[in-house]
Structures are given as structure tokens and as C-alpha cells.
Image 1: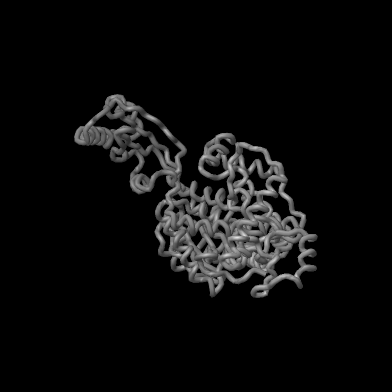
Image 2 (image 1 turned 90 degrees about the horizontal axis):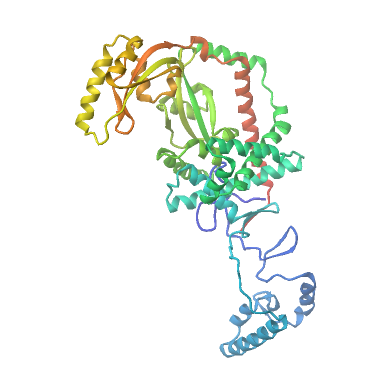
Length: 514
């Protein structure tokens, strides 16, 4: 059974939710496997059964020290126990014996062409008999560093390493549980998901593999994570979801509350959940604080959610979808309402762990969402001469703005552009929310036919947007359907059951930390 988590420090691992869970205790390292699957904790070197029984027969004739039979100690340990004079004699005898043994092997002179990498096969943890190596941890840690652009201090890197180890342990437990219930993931599906990841990076499969290797990771690391997510998802669908019930009356009650809440704020929320017990809560809060600090410095919230969150939304990058404040835990309601769009909360203690909340967007329920308005725009672009000074660029911008301000709408855009020596590009299907926030604010207040102030840079030139039309979404567009509400309630309950399921797997696991 796994022991309770301890704090981060020498010989310990502690992190919140899927943040790489599981502490590391200063247990004696198992130095030998007497039989497959059975760990022997001793100060003895490895021996086979024949040697073991031979020594057991001789033990009555062997000296003892502190309860240890000296025959079970390495030669170096015996030398340390002998008096100084005896140590010299013992050392000479050992050297002579070693020379005779080497001669008996008849080893020729040789040249070593390969390189020794002690990390490749070194076990970091053994989870119910399955090994997690240092290389596994390094490759998965590299994925986190890629998501953060490598901008992580050495101290933060060590903390993340512990978190990654904990997550790998959970991943092993999930894959093992899926295999026990004959839940398999065909390799073609893993390959397809991997190809989609490469496409998200806008790279070919071969280029993406090289990119991973250049950054200290490997394709197998991502594929193993994909395999774990798919296996766990299928296991939940088979063993958890069939026992989750959401009644039609419950869904209708939620819909009625939504209708009564017309005009109230609704939030597009992302979450990272880290499990904790009362004993580990302070440490998990500290770990969550480090994640928040990294995200606020520019790290990807989605990447951290995928790697560290224990919630079922981890595979979606933590996306909870559109929710009202009252649908969230009481501890989160006031926080979500107060957060501005695009911001991340401080770590928040909740029942069972710690939450980090990101408010991606806001809107009013049952009201037209301005960010969903479809715009028809014309863009006038004028290149700036090479080496132009800031003063000259400002003069050119003022002239361009003066000519476009009163040009009478999009009908004369081509004529004005020709006079300015500018190019014209049209777009009739541009969503307001896809524009930069500054332009959203300007265009949201502009009447049709008006033009924005000139903007740009020496490299991109001067630009002006002319608003040719705007189609606002209907007020009912924000109302979720019955199926959407049902799905959200079902997912929330599955998520809660999945956390309890994983908690039980941890509790019953046999985990050896090296």
C-alpha cells in the first residue's frame, strides 16, 4: 500500500493532482531481485538461489556484526570492518584473486565503440512491477519545457520533475487497470492521435519527431501519454459511465434556472485540479502556486492542464466550457466572477484538493454575444519605405487616417487606396472574437462605414480597417440545448467518480521509489 505523501525534499515527491502525484520516501533501495516481482531489501549483493542456500548452510560458522552475516556483505564492506593491518593483507589478497579471475576469463585487449548512458535503464520507480526510468521522466519533462519555451529556472525544473514522476505513476496505474479489464488501444489509433499532435505544431510527422529529439523528448513519450489517456477514457466509459445517472427532470431544472438567469454573466472556464489530503494540502498549494506563476509568465495553461490536472478535462486542456458561477464549487463562484477575461486565479482549496481557474472569455446568458458578431471588413495596407524615421511614419499615418476617416464607406475604399498607393484586401466572414482585443474594442463601437485609426509597424506597413457590415448573433444563441446541459452534468459526475477510482488505485498500489 502506498504511504501518505510527504513534502518535497530529499527523498520525497509531493505534488497535487495529476501534477505528478506520489511522494518519495527514504526507503532502503532494493539491491537485488531474488525472484521476478519480489523485492529484497538488504545490504547484500545479488546472488542466485544456489549461492543463497550455500551461505545459509555456512552461517553458523560465520562471524556476525549487528545481526548481519558477514558472508552477505560485499568485500569492500568486509575490508572496512577489519583492523588496519588486516585491511592491507585483505586488500593484497583481493587484488591477487581479482587478477587470477581476470586471467581465467581470457579477455582480449578491446576498444569500446559505444557510449555508456546510465540513465537509459536506471529505474526511478517501479509501479506494481512496471518500471519508470529516468529517461521516461526526462522525456516527459521535456514536453513541459517545450510548452513553456524552455523558460524555467533550475529550481522550478526540479519541482516539475517530481510532478512529472507523479503523473507517470498515475498513468501507469491507469494503463494497468485498463489492461486488467481487457481495455485495449490499437496502435493505429495512437498513431492517428500522434499525427494530429504533429499537425497542431504545423509540422510533418518526420519533422515533428526530429523536433522532439532535438528538444530532449521522443515520439514514444507522447505516444505513451496518448495511450494512457485513451485507455483511461475507455475504461471510464465501460466501468463508470454506465452507473452515472442524470435525470431529465434534473436537466430541465437547470434549463429553467438558465432562463431565469437571462442577462447574467457566463464564463468560459479552464481548470487544473490537483488532489490533496489535509496532510499534503500545504505542499500541494505551494506546487499549484508555482504553476500559476509559470502561466502568468507566459506558459501555456492548456499544456499544464494536459500534463498535470487530475480532472477528466485534462485531455481537453482543462476546458470546462461555458458555465455560470453558481454551477461551480462555492469556493470558486466569487473568484470566477471577479476574474477579468484572460486571467488565471490563485490556487483555491476545494474539497478533495486544489483548483486553478482560468477565465478564457465572458458573455451574458441569453443575450447576443458581441464576440460572435460576423464582420465584413476591407483592409487598406500601405508599405513604409525602408529606414523611415518615426516622425515620417507618424506623418504618413496621419495622412492615411485623414483620407479614410471621411471617405464615405467601403464603396470608395478602392479609390482612396489607389490615391494612397495602398493595397486593399476584403474579408466578409471575420468573427469579432478572432481579432486582437484592441481592435475588438474599437470595432465594437464603430458604425458601419467607419474606418479605424491607422496602425501597424515599419515591417508590416500602415493599415486601416473599414467596417462594411456586421451581423450580430441572435439573442438565443447563448442558450444551451437539452443535450448540452445533460452532457455537462454527466461529465461532472463522471469526473468526480474518476477521481475516486484513481484514488483507490493509488491506495492499493505497490510503488517502489529508487
